[in-house]
Picture (tube, rainbow, N blue to C red):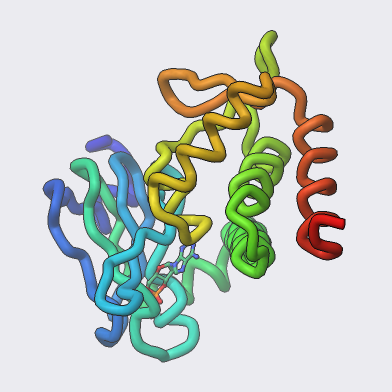
Length: 215
Ligand code: CMP
């Protein structure tokens, strides 16, 4: 790491638990993660909700620099981290001087917007079963890993519950139903969706039920 000229110039180490900035503050820097993990969170009705946990290669804190607006969320070190801390002038010079950086950022921002759209769609579903199944089908097709048993997705039940706006109990109930129906298998790091197209069919069925009721 010592030989990396970017790290020599902008690198800093942060301990677990350190708050990098809080929602509402003025943004003075953006960050690129070299190693470790950073949690982005937002206060909703006095409860701190995790939006996303970011890892190596990802960046954050660019929004307030680009828009000149207060921080849209808070950032806390979740796992000891080495970060590049970049001031607005350097950031602008980097983007202007290197189209590759700009293209990578646009792609990442488009991905973030797509994830936010998926979440909006999910939260508009009224039925608990539909929200959990919608999360699973979308995560399987966006971030799933193919394995001999099906498509593996990594998450904790707590993360899933946070994303779909439900408590742990209803989420566990739905997951157990899916396991009993052999649509899902629990693994050490998350779940395996045994047959994504079957799960998608089940979601369509739930959506029809939501639309037309139990007739
Ligand atoms: P900024 O508004 O400067 O400070 C909070 C940062 O969190 C924001 O910039 C983004 O970099 C990041 N952020 C906000 N919302 C999301 C999201 N939904 N997914 C990933 N990162 C986000």
